[in-house]
Image (tube, rainbow, N blue to C red):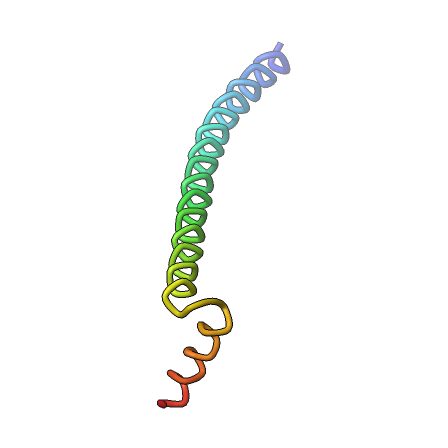
Length: 74
């Protein structure tokens, strides 16, 4: 008879652990998703900045030459 009681207690503890784990897992998914979305926004912003610089410099060669001129201090 005491074996039956022990098995019921173990199943109740297991159910509580699964609930805590699934809530934690869902929170982790939301955090990872928001980090990925922010990374995407930063990536798009950097591409937009590089495209703007390339248009202002007159093309990719002008951008690279202007970069090296800025590094050399010319």
